Length: 439
Image 1 (tube, rainbow, N blue to C red):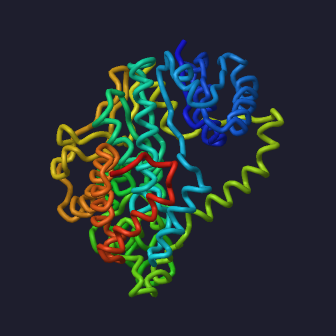
Image 2 (tube, rainbow, N blue to C red; image 1 turned 45 degrees about the horizontal axis):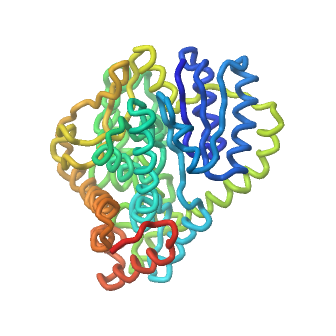
């Protein structure tokens, strides 16, 4: 027997994937499952769905319980072996809307705004205090639990947790899993399985450093040739990341719409033609949120009708839990602190994304060679912002918010220092009630 607590259980579809995967894993089928959220309606919907899932695919073997609100949070966590975090503080409405609309008044446009940029900074500032509360409760009622974080901005949140709490934690992202085969399929490159890949860097900007097919053939020369030809032909897919290949020599893990706002090169008011040239979808995340909300309204009745089923996905969570419980080894791309110089030419305080071995001993990150200089430099432009945002969250000093924004590549390439400070002040005011007091 063991216990899995799901924080942010109102994320019903994602809860279905993680919990459904666990119910299809023999070593986890008898776990107690605790669902926690602060939204009563969404919590109840998830509870009904998970209860039906338990009956339909798990012979009712799991014990399902629900916990609503901060006053019941410790009970949700008490005795947990694993805690999955999928919260979104402030949701789409009002906080994501604020993260997009206030910067627009300054002429600052974004695509996703959940990882870096001014939107990523403020998403971290309103989420870190909640994770601090989670950690304090966990230190009291489940000090040995593993905290599996899926919430963005990943590097800032996982970095905070690993530097400032005593909780065992790893940050988990889908982008590593989909990177190599997605690239090969996109470029139409035939290959034999299993492929060999080596990926390291930071979340959403980890680098595909090596890729070979099953017989040892280096696939990168053909990848580079086809990616550059696609750019030269125009209007192809994934143009920001293919430009990375052309200019930096390597592909990175997260999508072009994400990476367009992680640097100072693509979204530039002085060069509006770049938006079409690179196919950059401004305001993409709000569109996704609106579509997701509409899709949930359509799918909700199906989920609540009780006919829900599941097939195990490739989500890391159940495989990590299985590896720790059974000592069956598993490899992930995990977000962990660089404290032992896992990537030697990145700061020890940074949160890096590297291969990790999982077994009964827990999460064991694998040391890497230094990154090629240009790749480490690109990562550093993001790490600067991540570390200063964490500093702001810990010290509650506005000056560190300003500094994080001043060093953000996209924000600083578009706005003056005075406008950056004014924008931060406007966002602090607009997010009042979602942020602690800053001095």
